[in-house]
Image (cartoon, rainbow, N blue to C red):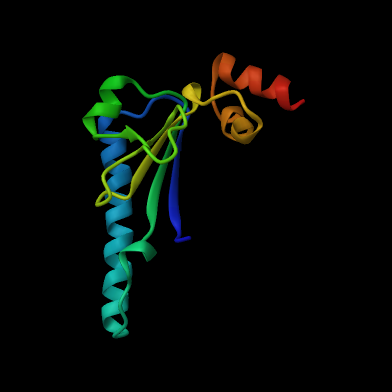
Length: 122
């Protein structure tokens, strides 16, 4: 598994905030590729870092603006992937299923999602 960046948002991120996250990702990838070139080694695509955006919620507009979709291989509600080239994923915490595997993420949510998760984990 390769490294990743994690950006967490207490509220739904704006389009500009998502673009800022993408800029950080692309800057890091570029830096790693330049360093590899200087050292005369190659980095495979699978070894470049990806981005995970954790958002308390995500509107349909936000999801569609960046082309996020449910992963057809693992269609967990609330977990969205982008095209392979962007290497970016979005978790809409309020949409996650109420199962033990999502508890720690739901605790990062807000409002009733967070309260419910805290009671569940307590």
